Structures are given as C-alpha cells and as structure tokens.
Length: 226
Length: 226
DNA sequence: ACTTTTCAAACTGTCGACAGTCGACTGTTA
DNA sequence: TAACAGTCGACTGTCGACAGTTTGAAAAGT
Image 1 (cartoon, each protein chain N blue to C red):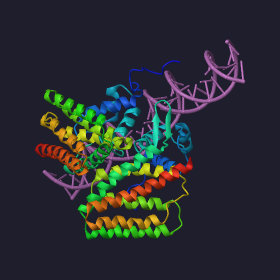
Image 2 (cartoon, rainbow over the protein chains, first blue to last red):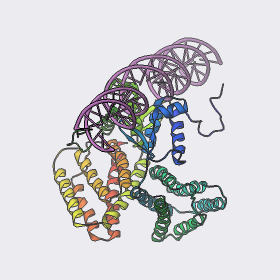
Image 3 (cartoon, each protein chain N blue to C red):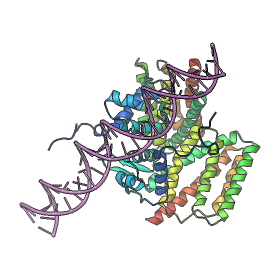
C-alpha cells in the first residue's frame, strides 16, 4: 500500500492544476506583481508555468467570478482595476454583510463565542505590534471572517469570502507598504463591546463606524495615488 | 465608421460557446431537466451539443461560481442539491441583502423611483392574473432586481444576481407546477408603503415579513416533497 | 505632417487526443 | 452466502494544434 501523498495534510495537496494556477494568479495580483488593467496573456502564463493553456483559462474564469480579473471576449483577461465608485460600492456591500453577520452572532452569543473573539482580538493586537508588513491586513480579515463563521450561515460566509478577494484587491490598489496602523487592531474591542451589550442598535453603530473608518482610509489612500 | 455589431441589441449576441453552454445548462437545471445530484458528463454534454469538451468545462466552472453545480475533483460536475439548512441560509442572506438594498432605496427615494416601482408592481399583479405558470416567479424576481438596481450599487446588484440563481434553484427543487399564489403579487404594495413611509424600521419590518413568507413557503414545499 | 488603408504578428476560441484515476463489475475465497 | 481482491471500462485532467479575430505598426494617400 503506497501513500498517494503526505498524510499530514488535512486536505490533500493541490489536486488539479487549475487550483494551483488560481492560487498563483491570486497571489500575484494581490501582490501587485500584475498592474491593474494589465492584460493576462494565456500563452505567456502557460509557458511561464510550463503548462498548457487549458488550466490557465479555467483558473482565469475562477478569478473572474471572484472579481479579480475581468474577461473581454476575444480580448482576453485583464487584471481588474477599481475606481473610487466601485471601491465605495464594495465597502458599502461589506457594511451590509457585516451588519447581518454581527446581528446573527449577537443573537446566538455565548461565553464560548466571547472567548474565541477575545482571543482573536488579542492575537490581532499582538501581531499589530510586530513589524511584518502586509500581515496585519490578513489578520484583520481573519478576525472578520471568524465573525462570519460564528454567524453560522454557510452562504453568508461564502458571500464574505467572495467579497474579501475584492477587499484585498482594494488594499493592493493603494500602496501596499502603507499598512494599516496598529491602532486599528485595538479598535476591534469596540466591536466586541457592541456584541456584548446585547443591543442591536449599539452593535450596528459599532460596525458602521468600524467599516466606515476602513473605507475612508482606503479611499483617502486612493485619492493620494492619483 | 463601421458599426462593430447590431446596434439594436444592448448586449451583442452570444459570442463564445462558453456563454451559450452556460445559458443552456442554467436553463436545463432550473427547468429540472437535470435531477439535483445528477452527474453532468462532459463528454455526453459535448457530444449532445456537438461541440468540444473545453467550452463545457468552462461553462460548468461558471455555473459552479453561481452555485448551480458543484465540482468534485476527478469526479466531475454534479447538479447542486440544497437541503433545508442550506435553503434557509440562502433566504437568510437574501434578507440581509434586501434590507440593505431597501434602506439605500429609501435614502434616495424620489417621485421617479416611486413611479417605476408602482409600475413594476402593477405589471406584477397583471401578470399574476394570467395563467402562465412559472413566469410569476421570474416577474417576482424582476421586481426585486429593480430594487437592487435602484439601490445604485453595482456590487450589491451582483451579489443579488449571484444569489438569484440559487433562489431559482430553490424554486426548481420544489414542484415547479406549484407556482406562487397570485396574492403574493399584491403583497408587494406593502413593501412600497414601507419605502414611502420614510421610516427605516417600518421598511425593514416589511422586508423581513415579505422574505420570511417566501422562505416559509419554499421550506414548506420542500418538507412536502420528502 | 496627418489621416487612412493594408498587412502581418499575436492572441483567443475551439477542437481532438492521450494518460492517469476512479468506480463498478466479476470472480474468488472463507 | 458474504466479504474481498483483481480487473475492466469510463471519465476527468491535461496537452498540442488549427482557425478566426484583434491589434498594432508599417505603408500609402491626401
């Protein structure tokens, strides 16, 4: 009996090339290694990766559904570029989703949930103290994803995951080195307080403020870039 | 200066086979011509349509992002089947999205918007009087889509469009002949009243009630099917 | 010098084919 | 008879190739 792969991995290693290419492209786009609006040549990518064009095409379609690239028929795939209006729309949808998620979490609030969120925020703050750039944003998103996990709605979680790719794209659009300030991390305690209060109004206000600050920050950076 | 295509069509006619196959598969699944959980053979579809497998694969990936099919590696694509919990999640997310959309529409309410919505509801009621089965659901969704258009957030609209495919799948899961009753059409006036009131609370209550009724109706039908 | 036309290179859309893998059927054994 | 192992068939994943289209630049005309 021979093993088909490393048994340590909970999920078997990347199966098909499509997923591998999708991950590669996602990382490349979010790392700004591809300029927004840049054309993604199928043949160039395929030859660079040493594979055929078919997996590249399917991976590109996957990224299209995530909003990272757009396809123009007979023209190919292009790295998506967001203008101020689209960016504002993304954050507005995020407010709608987060309001809903927080409301659901508040409805099923428990000591266990409180403990998980507290630990997550403490982890967030400890990471914020560190100097590793870029990671803070991922840690921030991880906290918000935890909220959506605790909301206990798989479809809602998927909606957030889809949106989070565009959120990362928003961050990638502005200067990547301009990481979020460390003070943002501690700001998450206000969200937890909103949940603990048991008051939907207070919780919603905390969410609106939190996301609003993030939106304004990104918008301000975008304006600077112009 | 030569025109690049027929100027009458807002969207140029179907270009690539991928979109055509995607439309074909979407229609076939939502018409219950494919049983939920059924395996979609690439070769069978390709030979039936008289085309190659490549467009079929790409179209299937498109439908996967819309939640109509799921892909299992090395196993192929399967028509998605929703259990009661997933179905409940879909309607819960819909409540979240519609709350947000209605709130935005209410914030930018005007006589022009009121006129468009009134006309839409009247059209809805007139169609409901007719006997054509199945159309009522599409007309119902068209009204709600108008709400999301008037909400003036392209990303929010896209989220609804994505979800609407799953909503149609929910309807397809239950007996297609059990069309929604004609009384539902007139129920939309309550939504309009909620908007007109200018009171966010009243508007939100109307939305919650409206979507809740739809969810309970679908859930009840799903239970009957078991 | 500027606009228009032509043309070739590159690219996308689509196709047929091969190899590896998964599942089902069948034959064997306890 | 039931459980198990081996084999076979079918299917997906991937590849290379061809045809039609777009694009950009070179060439011709005003």
